[in-house]
Each structure stands twice: as structure tokens, then as C-alpha cells.
Amino acid sequence: MSGVAGTVPVVKKNLNGIVGFHNLPNQVHRKSVKKGFHFTIMIVGESGLGKSTLINTLFNAPIAPTRDGNAAKDQQDSASKTVEINSFTSDIEENGVKLKLTVIDTPGFGDFINNTEAHKPILKSIEERYENYLDQESRVNRKNMTDNRVHACIYFIAPTGHSLKQLDVQFMKELGPKVNLIPVIAKSDVLTEAEVTGFKERILQDIKANNIQIYYPAVHENDDPETVQEIKEIISRIPFAIVGSNQTFEHPPGSKNHIRGRKYPWGLIEIDNEAHCDFVKLRQMLIRSHMEELKEHTTQILYESHRSLKLEGAGVRGKDAKTNPAKFEEEKRAHELKMAKMEQEMKAVFQQKVSEKEKKLKQSEEELYARHKEMKQQLEQQRLDLEERKKRLLGGASPARANSNTPTQQSQKGKTGLFK
Ligand SMILES: Nc1nc2c(ncn2[C@@H]2O[C@H](COP(=O)(O)OP(=O)(O)OP(=O)(O)O)[C@@H](O)[C@H]2O)c(=O)[nH]1
Ligand SMILES: [Mg+2]
Image (cartoon, rainbow, N blue to C red; front, side, top):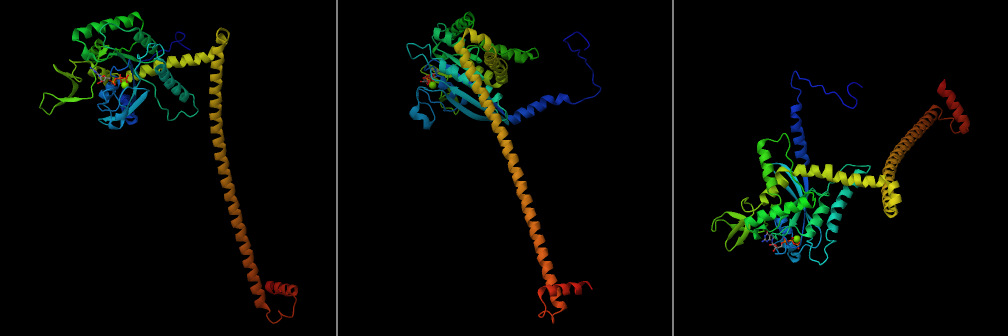
């Protein structure tokens, strides 16, 4: 090998003509548009903070049951508190681009005296989705893989105006390394502008002091100044102060212009007005500007670390066996189960291939037999025809003596007559 060990010399060449690879971005674009996009958001937070309402605000349709009963007609009966993890999927199309948006609603926590276990089902759901993907990756047939991993997790913070609660700190600390955590201040319409600003500062301080990992959109080297400005604006709004609503109002009253908002005796709070709340900025980051980055970060960093921890867990058994025999046994069993499952899958594929081959062989054997039978029949028919002809010829040659001779004599004489 030439050059410094471990480095590959890069030769830069000026092309004499256009080769055509400037068209590569268009190829990627065409392929992505054809395939469509899939994005999954999870909504987490204390009970009654407007999580289900935000889902309806995001989709602009009453799909998730909420406490004020603003849900789809067939869900009116259960319209209340969310009691289990529900997911809502919608196929959206804009200018020929298809997006499958899934939003996962989770039951609110914080209703009990002891809430220390509240986060477990939510973390379990996130991990199960990773496990499901890992399982699909280790299959023999990896066609048609479905990606149900959570790409963004919106965490609702109660609008107390103070700082983060202990429960929030604990939960966010656990969620941070697993998902793209996006903190939001719920029902920010109950706080004044100055209160929101102060609250945001204290939340960010708490996040830093407790080493909580949250998602910040990245600024890239080759971003144009306009994009950089946009990203900076988004970052300046974190944690997003949001307001959700299922209702629209005429604005100004009496006009045909309907806007989404919450009506108070002193005025209307507009959801889609950036001066009133950060909902538009949150939606812009989630869907318009950073969806791909959120997905990439999930796949390359968060899922990858889950995956390597899992695989490492299976690999460093020797060490574990001495320090934690119970864990070692559990992992050993899980690994064995997985291997058995893979073996079964491989056996099934092998069996399928063998039976396909057998079926084909049997079919060709049957075909051969049928042909053989047909040929035999043809030959038999020919033989009978010849016999018939022979009889007819013999009968025609000596009809007068036919009666006085035995059949043997008759045929011998016939034969002589025939070859004369
Ligand atoms: N003031 C105010 N109220 C809101 C807002 N969003 C929702 N609400 C109201 O808060 C109540 C609870 O809303 P939900 O969306 O059911 O809350 P949730 O977080 O899903 O509740 P759980 O499912 O019990 O956890 C309803 O009466 C909503 O109308 C908001 O932005 N501001
Ligand atoms: Mg709910």
C-alpha cells in the first residue's frame, strides 16, 4: 500500500465534460417521493395537560378523545381521560408527496401519591418498538420491514411558572437517551408573556443542571443564511410554549374567516399565530424542516446505542456471569430463544424450498408417465391397426379355401402369398 499507513490518497480530477452525476439529488428525490414518508411522534406528560387536544390540533381533526369531549362522534362515549397507549395514523398528501403520520397518545401520569413507576409503560413501549425493529433486522427475509420506532417525543410540562417538578426531571432523564425529547410548556395561555419567558429560562437551567438530553436542531456548515436564521429562531423557542384547541371561531366576529383558538372574555388566543404561542414553530420543526433529521438521529444514534447495548449484552457474558449471574442467565435464555427462532425460520425456508422442488419433480414425473402412457396407447393402436390390415389382406387373398384350413395353415399360406 502506498502513502501513510491507514490513509487513502484522494485524487481530485477536473472533468472534461459533464458526466451527469449532478442529477443524483433528483434521483434520490424521485425515489423518496415514490416511496413516501413515515413519521412517528409520541406525546407524553402529566394528566390533563392537553396531550390528546394537541393531537387533534396537529391533525386538525377530532381523532383523539379528550376530557372536554371533543372527539370523533363514534368515540364520544369514551371521550375523557386517556387510559391506554393509543396510536393514530393518517395518510396525508401534499403536492404529490405522501406522508404517513403516526401520533401515539399516552395516558397522563401524576394522579397517584406514588408516581415513581409512571414512566415504565411508556419507556417499555419505546423499547419494544426498537426490539421489534431489531427482530426484523435479524430475520432471514428482510423485505417489507416496518419501522414503528418513535422519531420524536413531545414532553408536556405543566404551566406552573416555577421550574421542573421532580417527576419531570426523573422522567426526562430516562427518556432523553432513548428518544428525541422535545419539551413543551402545556396550556401556555394560562401564563403571561413575562411568565412564559421566565419559566422557559428556569426549565432550561434545570435541564442543564440535571444533564437531561433534549433534542436541538443542528446547524450545518453548508446551510444558507436564511436556513440558519430559521433554525436559530426555532432553537430560541425551546421549550415551545403551546396552546391546543379543537374549536374554531369567526375572526373578526361576523366574518367568514374561521381560525383555531381559545376564546376568553378578554379576547381570542390564536393557535396558528406565532405572536400568541409556539405551536406553529413546533409543527414547522417536526414536519417542515427537521423530520428527516429527527428520523436520522433516531436511527443512527438512539437506536444504534440501544442495539449495541443489546448485542454487547449478549457478547460480554463471561464478565456478566461472574458479576450478575441472574442477569447472565436471563440474557442467555433470551439469546437462546432468539437463536432458536432464527433456526426455526431458516428451517421453514429450507422446508419450503424442498417441498417446492419435490412438487416440481413430482409434476414432471407425472408428465413423463402420461407421455409414456400415451405413446404406449399409440403403439398398441398401431399394432391393432396392422393386425386388422393383415387380417383383411389375408381374408381377401384366398376366400375359397379359408373354411377348409386351420388358422395356422391359413396364416402361413397367407404369408407366402403376401411376399411372393
Ligand atoms: N387552557 C387550555 N386548556 C387546554 C389546552 N389544551 C387542552 N386544554 C383543555 O384541557 C383539558 C384536558 O385536555 P386533554 O387533551 O384531554 O388532556 P390529556 O393530557 O390528554 O389528558 P389525559 O388523557 O387525562 O392525560 C380539556 O378540557 C381541554 O379542553 C390549552 O392549550 N389551554
Ligand atoms: Mg388524553
